[in-house]
Length: 240
Image (tube, rainbow, N blue to C red):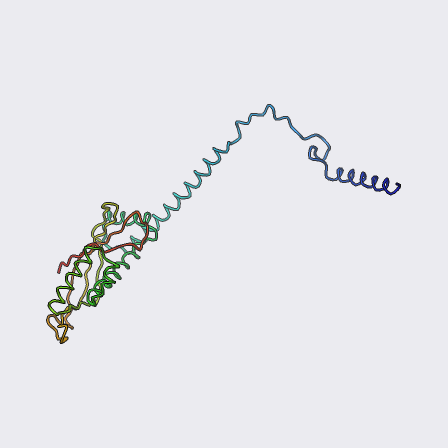
């Protein structure tokens, strides 16, 4: 019984000591009551959740605009640095493509045109339909197949080698039926000849003579896909 009393006294002492040190949730260090009567407070001065959400949305919108403006500025600088004699209209369209097409860059696009041009010609020269189909639309592919079939009937094989791609120039950029359409003039140096399929003898042309060739290639991409890598060749016109 005495032990219980002793433990009770110790507990009361500890509680009083802690209260003196920490205070309680309703008083400050001086012991004065700090609970305020808020019945007369005008709460209209405080932001409602919907207004806070509006502020957050506005901040995010401003951040997006700032990021877009940075893309536009960087795109314009890179285009001006390497675009040569492009018109202002085409430069502005290229800037728009930087913004709208994921991963697009002017230099990257020109590099892609260069690679595609040489790959398609190589595919034709080697009768590699897989390469042609992967890079060209149906109409262009069918035209290549028609020429290859005609050559096969005549028992000749046309050979075309790009010695050097000399110049790639964007002539026009347009949007037609949700498709970006980029018209490009390509000047290159090529070796062209044909050989007999059976004998391998030269039927026409020369393996050593180089020709300066000008062509118009049109590249298209669906603007709803938003992927830089989905450009296809939709037209080829040989000028000289």
